[in-house]
Image (cartoon, rainbow, N blue to C red; front, side):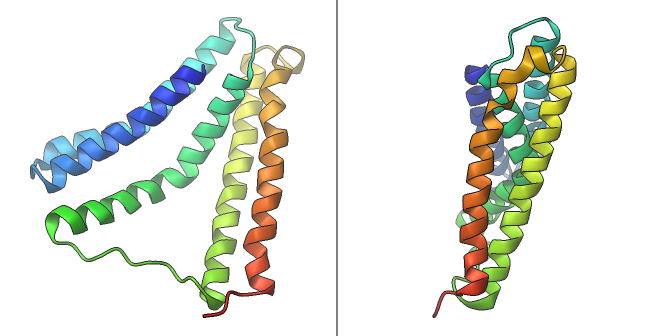
Length: 175
């Protein structure tokens, strides 16, 4: 399962870069559109493979839990990653404007950090929901308890992210 997650991550970036390369360097709009539309299909492949594996009686592993984390993170943050890459490709290859850096100090920076934490929380909730679905598909909690092992580490990461993100509200960075 870990190999499939790695393959999906690689597939995400390969399709994204290929789509942007086709758009900005080769000027192939239709090919670019097809490649960029295929980016979320990678997530559907991982979702289907995980569900089929668990439904087929496979022993639930940490890899299945990581699949839920990967899917949740790409659903919540994937659009931002695509937009980030698109702006840079447009600037580098099509004379687009330079990427605008976000605020690094003050209230604007604190607000951006809080928004990012809430997006992280959304990914966390979505990941837990996917784990719940995988638990149902896999035959119940007694058969799929290993899936939930990722939530302990992810909860710690979410708590640390909260402390860091909201610390800027209390103590904003100085210019």
